[in-house]
Image (cartoon, rainbow, N blue to C red; front, top):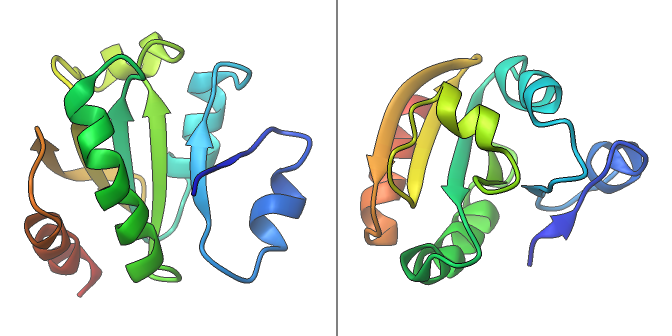
Length: 131
């Protein structure tokens, strides 16, 4: 289950957490600066699911993303970014349809997946960048 992370509880919820860190970016965050800090400055692989609450395919994909967060704990940073609340970041990455999943490695976009797809297909793409 995703947790709501704010600037005030990031240390407690993410840095001091010994399990899966499934980060959900909300409108309360300053999207551009937090995205920079949490994703673009991250050393390693990050997976960002660009979604919206009203999007039925996004809701279909949500349980898959949650499973991936568990499966890839400690290997991949998994995040969800609400495009309605973070329009600047969605535009910056030219997200034209949702769900769009972008894989970053060391802060650089390396792969992009669009639409609902099986967990195995997403895992295959993640595995490519972990190795």
